[in-house]
Image 1 (spheres, each protein chain N blue to C red):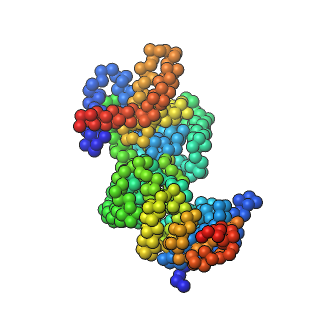
Image 2: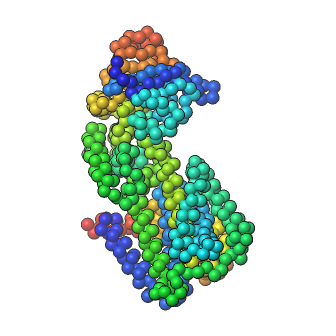
Image 3: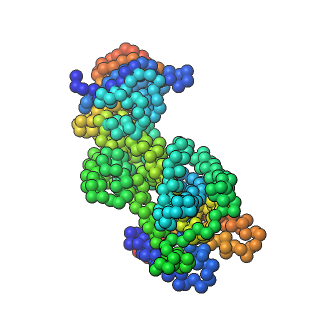
Length: 318
Length: 255
């Protein structure tokens, strides 16, 4: 796509998202849209490490969990304001990623995937069993919303929260775009293509890989925090392996290594299972089938296919 | 003799029980082109890889501009002025030629990488200077006409020159060329030899491994000959050509 066409797409998407709550008549869909926007943030992070750097990490939901529990527990035990704990949550996730990323990024490919998978299992087990702190499987209820009661914005209103998450999702997507266009982004892309050569031309690959891993965790931590304050309730179930796989799928289906891909992918992984409800108990099988077929026939994701179609159309028109 | 840019002293490298390099010592002076030749399996590539830091050496020292580098990782040696190319073409195939050379040159930038996310003023100035340097290198290596092409679409000879261009962009004091003429036709080989001399004229020392003897004899100031991991001779091209041990081990009578 050309420079201007790309910006046209971004503009149209923005307007679409801004109008969405007015177009939605079923409240439940607005709820799903808020969840999808939270997933956009998590998927943008996943895309940095998976899509651009080429390291498939299976711990994104675990990092979301760390963010969700951090914001909740910091508020609960230290009485910190919600705004502050939302900002601290990604920092805690990032610190955790810094400690775990350094040793795990020494291995590549499937080994890296397995190591991160193990991290997610550990996070899940700790959240489940350290019940004095986390409430175990029952979780924690009554997580407060941002903003004071009777303030000029009522975050308990779903529509208000939608716009709140939308603004953060747009900011985080723009930040991802800036990272990708920077020198760091070039180095990440280079690592994905030929890591051996990256070292040989004088770039310390490990620093950039660690940057991508920590940034991904930061995105996840923020997404987790927004999720916790939206739902007012968290338990470990939503931060397990299945959700980390959803983050991976969101990137693959939307378009790995593209900026709009995770946006599309996040909406697919949130909405698709809902639309497959008609299949009842076959729902998960059907979901799996759709994902497998999409991966086989659209390896570059929806964003990739659309971009190809656009190029073909404009070439024909020219 | 002028100051040595690279000094190798008593270098040894074993893989298990195999001694790939034994007690190898030599030096490369500033602005010198040194050839490293020898039969297959004599330890030439092992030497280049050991110098570049692909694997640790078993013993011995490597001095780059007087500083010990044998324990440093590969990327730090590059920033200290040692750049290399590979025997087989290696590239970032999705990048354009210009992007790859610019990425190689990015290691010379002083501003922090994070500043490039937000495009600070200092970073912009530096990038402009780098762009000019990239253009100059592309011209030197004859790649200016394909600068905006994706690397996957350029010829194999151009891919070989691109490795040299990328290595040069890091601003090295010494350039290690591992069989740069492999797969080149004679006109391209001539371009290569002119390129090597032009690089030397810019004050960059060159260490070149090559099987193509005419090229070696033409460009090198001095030659080191390896056999079974040990140095068997060292001297000017004419000395090497007439060295009995070298003729027996490698060159044969025809040269």
